[in-house]
Image (cartoon, rainbow over all chains, first blue to last red; front, side, top):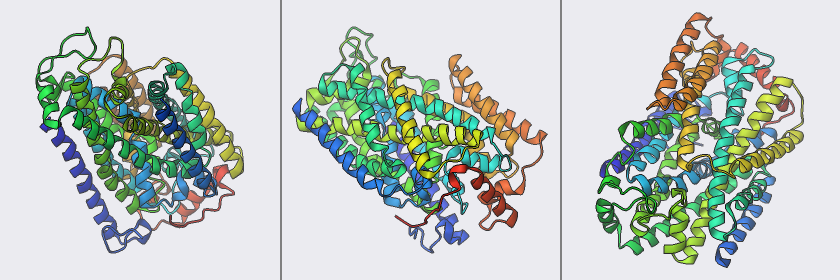
Length: 44
Length: 518
């Protein structure tokens, strides 16, 4: 049971890690049309 | 029963109200199919959550938790979340162009068949999508029928036709209608699941008691069936076995990001960042729904040790709610399950109908239609496809969650390389796309029919070999076909080519896309 829940939790953490990396790449690109604003979680 | 009927009537009234409101927002054909590429984070998260939480998760996963224990968490929940993690990789590239495609097949045309007057590749994908989504809608209709017949006592074969009424209501306004009702459905689903899980915890005496029961129970799934091994429900692989569980996990995870409706979802956000944030928010919201589902599925085994003979495990949650929860909680949760069926069904029907009419018919026959005619035709096709799906549901084809796994595996085997290599490898070309799609599709069907342990891996491997041979045996693609997905600023020749592709799609000729945030 614990192993199953850890798989699930691991998948959630992986989603966030990958998402943060992509957000950082967007910011690094500086392209406003893609959503770059200077702040990682601000999108307008 | 009047509580159940009353709750369903309230839900129907609520759907009518939200759809009439959202009608005002359905302004153009682009709005109708992809929300005008201007969807904000809140609505995007809501619609994604509701589409994700289908009857396969609300009824199907607790059914497998009941019969196979914790292994279902790895196979389906972790599988889908892992697949969800890969969706932003698609969104990061596919939402880059200033003028993105409106449908998944149109994206494939832009990437691989940019200079064709009529794209057979776009039509081929439209046909494959139609087949896949017909089965997925069929699963939603089956789930709706199970719940509705449990609520009303009406025969299942009649109850499934109630699905049509809700589909007609929710597809009046196209994508915005689907998105708006989806967001509210997500809230209904979350509240219903939490309420039911709390009740199950109170009835069983808590999670500790549930786990203690599962550790020793040998009660068969159905009365008179073979006894379970003690403790098997708490092992990571359950009664599936390692190979079968791995196959389910891979199909659910790797099939998800290349499933056309998830690719299409990545075309709707207002920009790339919203596409990524949407999925990150989504996995958190899903925790609120799926953790209660784990409690319900495992708790059901403690409260109902065995199902009556001949009753499928997909019925376990309706049984649990009716026999072990207060009537108000049961009514709320059963409406939530219907909401899950409707919200996923309407989204898939819209994708299915758009692919058939827009990507096959208009593309191949080069017809010109106004936005208004396009929307009316789509509404009509949505209804016809829904009728076919409901008729097919009269005799359910498979268990709910397993049906999803087959179709997701098929989509993944067919489209994975076309999507991911197309977005991340400039050398990927039209011949590679044709080879990977045809070989992946055929190989998955053969491998599944032959009962190969991991059909997805076999099919994708065959697809990759065929794809690489085709790519290197033919010319590299023109700059215009990949530049919009790789560069922020594109060349003049690419701009002209993209405009040409969009204008070649008759439905877009008269379209004025108004860019505004929501």
